[in-house]
Length: 435
Image (cartoon, rainbow, N blue to C red; front, side):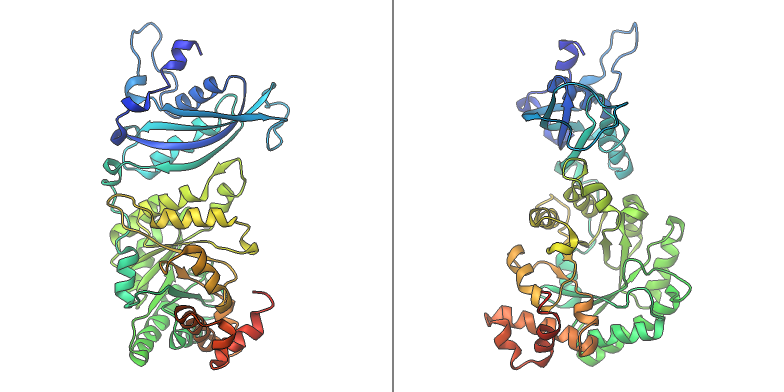
């Protein structure tokens, strides 16, 4: 690019019309001039060729993504990941961070078009930039106002469950996909009696031959209503309707008619646009699960940061977002978990807050740590084996989690509280060495 070509992809922040642009934070590794690399990154995701041969015109003022800030962080001995020799640019490698302003009129309030621009062929096949990661995305209120966002959000879920000033307690019915509907139903029913708010299908259990969704939801829907009568408290059965897009509304209608009063979708496998379609159709809460996201986010220097995916799920309308939680099993740094939690809770203009549900190998003994890290009770807690593998069964497992919260709320050490609560003591004995 000539110096004039470069200048067309840079903008003075003071002159930028912020409400007309989304802001994108990328890290990248390049060979050659970082300014030229950043300009290419803007060009490839927006205008590409910005004028026709022999025509006096320039599409950049209206359509170009533009660099707001560029930081060259240092020189590297090589790229962070091996690049095939036949495609690797040669020369000194620099690590950079850039903030780009992209006119949202280029794609409008359409998530597939947004992703095609900021995560598509343009940025991830940009000349001279083989290593790229989209770190964050920021939306102006003018853009957010074109989305519905969560229908219920945290406040709506709390109202439905009459659950205030505490976490919302989920449980993944186990064994996760192997049980036929009758024993699966009994496990969920017992967990509600023990104190769970939400008993849920596993993200891999949708509509298989051995547990058809119609049969399973009919049994669980009736069991939920029975548990509500017996406990005097509202309960939710969270049914997984993940499937081909053309079946989603059919499965939604079947599950809801049978008494499932919340629905689980694997957000990325079905697609965020499909999730948005279900959100517009449904009158029950919509909960996201995280399959496929790690494939984009796990590498430190390449792909898409998980908090971007969290923001997009919130934008699509999920009332709660299940995400990899704390602890070594989930391979997710604590800082990244907290960034995803913040993406659920931080102000997004007119978009309601989503309930963050960090999970992975949780049980009564890990509840205090999750609460301390998040710093409030605005989260969902989602044990699996910690409830359904409890020595006293699902009812005892759910009770142990509620007893752990009682101890936390009253400032009583868990071991001391367990002396008078056998379910909590059994959890400590069974899971304590692992916790």
